[in-house]
Image 1: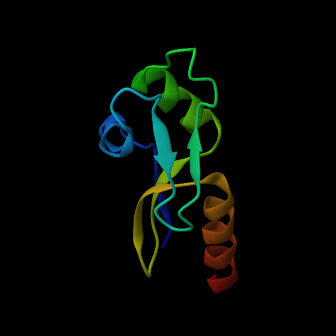
Image 2: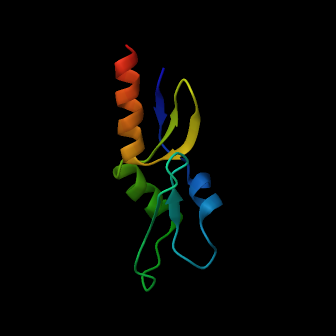
Length: 85
């Protein structure tokens, strides 16, 4: 079974460095996405909206649970789930 949920703002706050723009880190492949322009302040709420729009999700699969998973990993988890059916 594959269950997908939106990521939570507390997950973004947990991995963000204070004084820098927020970031997201994939729990599965460890890729990091963050705002590149340090001259523009992006809030956690803005980054949550951007990450959600970009396909980041919380995922629970048969084998593991990921607090934050990038869109590439979500596709891979979905494809693996479909093959099992």
